[in-house]
Length: 366
Image 1 (cartoon, rainbow, N blue to C red):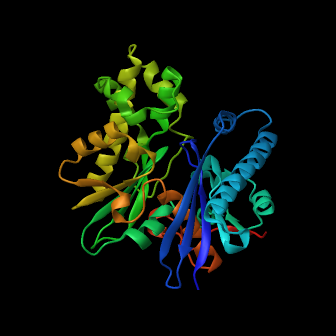
Image 2 (tube, rainbow, N blue to C red):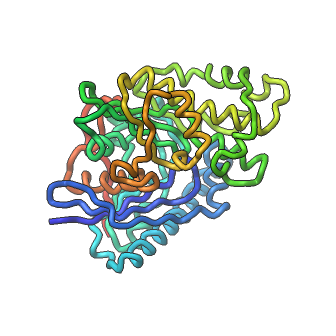
């Protein structure tokens, strides 16, 4: 029998909630039936950003924000069901990533909030959440989790592929014919670009990368940023806003003479493109094609910069192999919910560094 799942993803870009209705057939093949997006109110975005750093009254603020997120998640679920004319009973489970506020696998924890119990209460649907903790408990990073999904739906016998997600953080999955699947976080994706753009222009993001394209590269700043120890780490590795924050960028700028804001933006765009390209050169030999998903796929200037760094590799959208760029991450968490419901392992130890395969997630019944 076919089963329907809803995947919810709100990531480090803090733009909002992506939702996907995924149908899994009797052979375990996924098919997206619908998607929806609900932008974050600015108040939610600011509360998440505030919780990224140590502050006063964190427990209460995190709990209150988790409740607010659960209500947003329930709203986007309701919109998706209404658009498809489906009752809650038609959905086996919701896979909810939650909002990461701290990611510290080196300390033995990663923390996503979103009050899954409240989401189950509001939606009337079983919720599977807390996907990362079990992998961390097994010695892994708990991230990235999507390479297992990429392997399941995007692997090809015809070519060596890289699936590249550029959200707040950039991460890649190597799908090569004669190599094991490999995946890790490369570094900042849109996160620093968006933060710097909002600080200086008031816009939430740099549409098409036009502001970045108006600037000039500042080589000394770029080389200083690339000298960060994270870029020299060997996989498995993962990162987030805990490291690549606006504060990190301000620290980089503090050692440089004054730089025009648009030149900083241009250099940040090159940082994203070059850090990705370096990792593909090092860990993804003989790649024929890169398939890009996430918000960065819509940044024309970033895609051009990436192609300049990798002139021999064809760069496409994941839409060309079956899933539009805006659906991949949310579809992955619907797939993870399906794996949990069938008690199937969903991590890749060679990606996360965990001690072995694990069933991921925790159930919050409706």
